[in-house]
Length: 82
Length: 343
Image 1 (cartoon, rainbow over the protein chains, first blue to last red):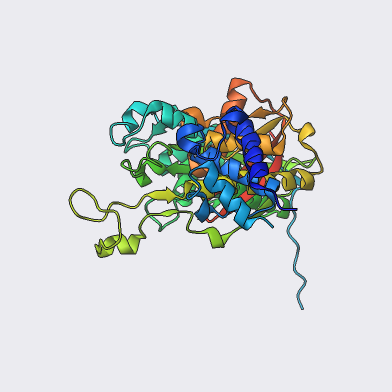
Image 2 (spheres, each protein chain N blue to C red):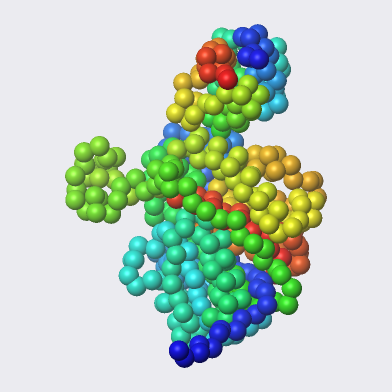
């Protein structure tokens, strides 16, 4: 069953917490991965791969650069999840 | 039909000795920061690199190889004249003809050993090791010298903030010879040419010679910038960590062991972040010693695995007889992984 926006944000918060050590409550739709959440370009790849597994979605390399905020990633997953 | 006598090789092969050469000049991040807008902290956090070695004009590909090989031959306890083949893996020897392996074989004092170069980027050591094992077991050489050597500082764009800090120079060598027990496991190797553009030379040599600057990086004097190695960082990182972790697991499976049986993990020293993520993805147990030679050696492509192996043994972090997983991966994209017993 497809995840809701709320579930995706919660899932991303877990992933970002696991990879970058950021408290889950800081991960909100308007937060920028690099500027607000200390997720650099390489950690972003780890976040993307973890999100792919968790939400059964494919996020190709060329799309990763467009995912600036948690909201961008959430929208992408909502649109592309199987 | 005449009956052809078969060749007679050893039952198994093993690495008998290892040697390394790092250029005299140590280059700290401060020197890199003279030509790019970055910081020591940024370079360390993205790559783990604190210092690297850059070769002087005298520290040529051949000179560094001869130094490293001499140590490997001594470590193996054999004479240069016993070496039947010399395999050199490099992408940074600027004269394509003849192969540099022949000069190295001659300078070492081999007795007309077969000698040739291979091009397999950062997987070059694993490719060479696989060839060497084949030669020893098949019988075309009793002892094979495998050298990984690079002068990547010659192929580095010092104004590119994504790669200026990454590369280093050096040579690593091993002697592969006969063994009574298996000491080099099956190699899991391959290529993914559909990703050939993710790590590449910025400009081909013929295009560089043409002088046609359209669409290419231009130097201060208006000419084409000298060719350098460039990569798509995120794509390479994803492939290196997640795809190569699968290959590493396949090499363990092929050798009939599990991660618990490992003493040492020596991945290609591409970037400490790749190494750390691979360790996590592979779920390597705490007791496994992980090579992180990249911190003071940088990324030396084909030389990185033998250099890291030599250092781990020299510092006592690893010991002779330890079981090690080695995996190389890079431009091609190509990869090679195998389990070996350390010399």
